[in-house]
Amino acid sequence: MTERFDAVIVGAGHNGLAAAATLAKAGQRVVVLEAAAQVGGASVTREFAEGYVVSAGAQWLYQLQPAVKKALGIDPPLAAGRLDTLVLAEGGGEPVRYSAARAEGVGEADRRAYAVWAKRMRRFSRLLWRWLNRVPPRPGGESRDSRRLLRMAVGTRLLGKRDMREFLRLIGANVYDDVHECFASEALRAGLCLDAVLGSHAGPRSPNTVMTSLYRRGGDADPLALPAGGMGAVANAMLKAARDTGADVRTGSRVGRIVVANGRVTGVELAGGDTIASYTVLSNADPKRTVFDLVGARNFEAGFVRRAANIRAAGNAAKLHLALDGLPDVPGLDTGDLGQRLLIAPSPDAVERAFNPAKYGEFSAEPVMDVSIPSVHDETLAPEGSHVLSAIVQYAPYALNGGWSNAAKERFLETCLVTLERYLPGLRARIVEGELLTPVDLEREFGMTGGHWHHAELAPDQFLFTRPAVGAERYGTPLDGLWLCGAGAHPGGGVTGAAGYNAARSIIDRDAGR
Image (tube, rainbow, N blue to C red):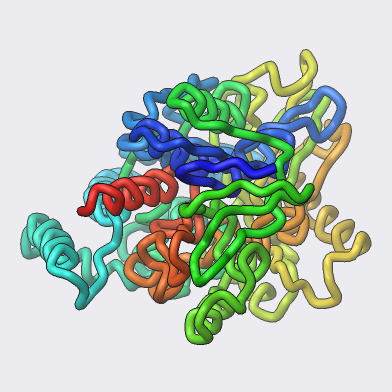
């Protein structure tokens, strides 16, 4: 059986759904094909123990871009918003607390310095995201590319001479030096360092980590929040938007290959053998999976194949889920505190030391963590009186020496639990069941090569004009009709919706002759 559509989208992650809704709203006949039983990709809510439900991949909502929300007409309901970040003290005690504009639990000088620093970072992040929310210009390209480059330059100049120099100085700098210039508190420095390196193969002393810090702020799209019902609720809101605009979204529909004939895409073939015809195929899968597994290297010229093969996409973060029969009684923290974002990061040097083993294929003996206990705010996630804990754990390299055997996973799980107990005393006694997802598990569950949530490392040679690789930096690829719309495309990962929305806008502009 063969059907025909104006556009076929491979994968119903949040970017795929954003692209579908945008294209369908423009009058195109669109079908989205998702292999899993539910939409969302890594933005999914699922049960991991009987009665315990968790956001299996992404766990915080704060980067969803306003333009995407407006275009799709969505505003996911929240279980909690405007959350603070707490940097925990070992053994309990008063944490250092910070948000988008203020810091507490630090000295007066640091409080004043943080207000200035946070204002500067918001301003710079907004400028960066002004670039990221547009199709990147091609240096040396057509006149419209020159105009886009000029607008970027003008945007930078609008900062003023002093701020422009500071922006250009910081964009390639490391976050370790920046926070040491600004603050005295080791805990505050540590939290800001961990913010900058989450999900990346980098430590605080690595170059360009101020850039990744600005990226993670999302242009201050929204305060830190927890969606009601977990991150799957965001994907479901996008699913409704896509279907309301006329898109056909099909789950349990695995694409076996993207069909190519006479040097161009002609549709897709499902794993069961059925085909769907279209001269426009958008892949929400990561670039490597798209090029090598879905299309096949033989359909691209050798130079592009080489560049695609060299995309760095080895994940370095694991995901830990714990079912708890109650909350631990932690000195210095009340229930409201336990419902905030909790960081385990003793010092900037400790974050750097945690990264060091990953350089050599080993997991950290003292991992750093981004912890959420969302059931404090959302009782639908666990049985009455019980709770769920979700943690992003660094560092856990995809290519672990000896591989991620069951024994290796057990060792790392024990390391994680020992670390958590040091900062949340009494937690282990509350554990009913646990689940550890290594980067290999994340690759298997979510189909992301290397288990990397950005699909390609955020680094200067894989960012803006060159993301994910030269030849595919503007959503289109060297293969006529094939487009990228996932986290591996510009601007990158996180629950932003920007890649899918921008890719769809690029196709609409192409069809309009712009």
